[in-house]
Length: 610
Image 1: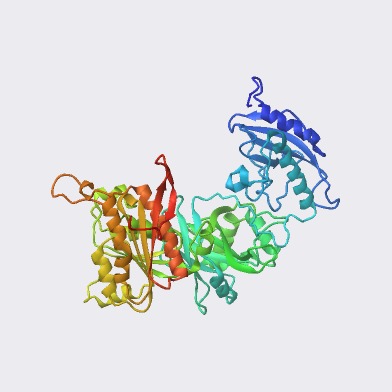
Image 2: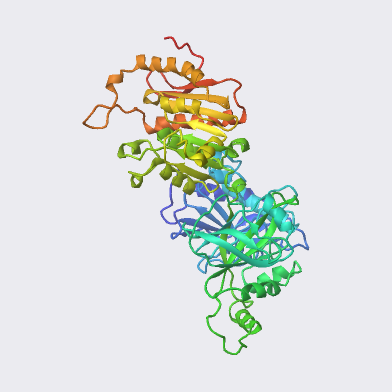
């Protein structure tokens, strides 16, 4: 039970954790834990004796500050080198080990003592003990092990996931690139180690530089980044780049923090930084500029290189005028810039960088490769079509065309993913704009027209006819009939997705061929619709206000999205494993005896006569 001490606020849980350290060989608490009210954390000074290599970089005895949340054993435990008696170098699996904040007795070099699944924030997945009697000692034991491995240079082992050094970010913008295996192949053919780059700026928070192209000289084509479309559009700062053999670090594994350290890290790779910077800086205009530093990286320690990675730092601005005391020449301007802007003691202003390649940003969940490589046409941008389109786009579908002639109405908002600002606008165009904004690697094309397309528009008919996957989301018999008479170009994967009354059932019809099989579709679907007509009083359907009585399809948004999510799985299966014959899948919501939701069941083979 949590029972804070009235004098020093030590909880019973933290007392238990401190007591357990007495049984940890080589570790002692040096003083009473200090409460830091500004952070609501405890600072616990301790000393760790480790079995280190005698000629290694780490002393046998070092001092540390353990920082624990007030909610211990919940929250995070941080193990930091003490400013007095702690290590000062930066190693793998450690934050940059700088002096830290003046008011703190610890440096900034936080050790990674957590397990690899700690980021999931579920103790049930983790081997880290959650009991107060063991949690604190567990972290200190791992810190002791970390010291022993660090002293022997064994923190990284072949086959371990490759990890970049910790980079403290200071700038007020980010940078994103798009590097994969194909661009790595291009880089292997590039001889030069410096050049300029082109970019857009995405109006994000903070603004993000979207690098689109690396110019590598007059006699070699540029290295184009693997974007499928333009992202952002604002004017970027000037960009220059240099390329190194591997990530620039000072041993053991510290990112350079000053221009002098950057020069030293380059020299360790046999690179003269100034010889690369001088021609690049000479081509810079005055104003804001960014230096990109690229190098190849693997997925695993000692594994093959798989892609380029880029770090970025904000360059000091070039002076607008001639600098007094230096010749007004290329050499004079360079020497002035070097002396006043990028001298050895000047701090580096690192920016946060990320690889936004499709393979990198979709690791949290994506469709199969077969599904992402198809050109998908969605006919109907209503509640089902819009949800289906967004789920497919966010899951990695690369090319989606949305076709619908309707405009968004206020009543649509209760189960549509468009917004009030879209009322009165075409659903297809508004939805395509949303998909473009939501999915970095999806090209979304709107067609603000009914299906079938105007036969006089040969280009539009060809574009529609050449799509690979045709999804009907209209719930409209006329649209489905038109699909059967349209002249498709080659075989297609056909899918028709619709919902029954109150979204109790999902009907998903799939087929493969060059003609949509409307007769089979009607044969398999119609008796389900007749069953629904018997189950519900169609005269009691809702309508939109006074006036001519036109019923609206009743379905709540959670039901629509739940069943549409299930339809995504059926679409993916139809693409990866096309049905040999047309098939209708019927999914039905289930309830228990008390009327509570009990899941979704495939009732396709149920007796449909009752």
